[in-house]
Length: 342
Image (tube, rainbow, N blue to C red):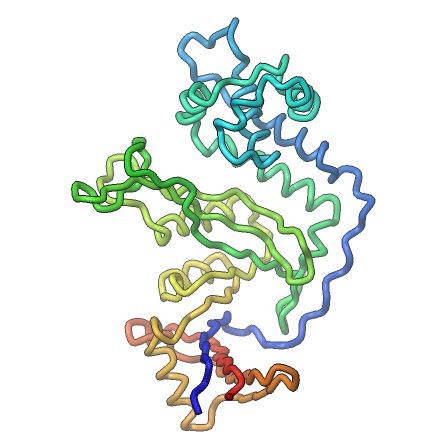
């Protein structure tokens, strides 16, 4: 008999954390008038108005500079499929009314897609960070943030911050000075942008709370691409600077299951849960196997009576991360899921 499939991964947990059943989050209040969409949008558009006009002649008789970032924000907020689609509808009376009243686009004057790119491309992402801080402060002061508290064992008043990289642009023809390059100088050369995105999450909440993302771009004076490993260093430093007292549990995928990243997280006083698949982190699984032989791991097996799926767990503290970092000890929860045998 053959198994349909076997899926295994390990979660590296922060030293000192104890597994347990966390309490369910409190229900979110529905009467938070200061967290309505219109008020949050107004908070963002006020921040966008502070971006300085970099156009050489300021175009005093042209489209007000604030209309550019606010139009771009509106385009994303209403989930337009493309800039061209947004451009084609910018003269629609209903669209103009909504842009004026909800997004504070002066006189409904929306730039075309080409001009939007020309004006917005040079704007540093730094100018967009303030809106994220303002939004987070609003959520924090309202008490809404407490709904995302996620206690684990002895860790109280902590929040889960999920981080991952995502690609936001890819082209075989178009590029800019900040583009990373794939197959540089070779056949199939392409250009792309990536973003280090993040959100405070909770398994019982349907919404997430984003913090300011970090762009993954080619750095000034560099010929090599930036990477997620470099970007996360900048990102974590910015999070600590912007939210120095926030107690965090950092959630990451297997790319970051390494000594430098773990030490960086611990240096900020945070904890972490990092996925480590056995195919990419063999030494960690081997160390668990050795502890298993010595009967130094806790075990638990459960079979779903309805589906026949078998869930197999083992847990151990102070496991060496890998041969390169033998002194970096982590807690490991090893999990295997086996489908029903037919």
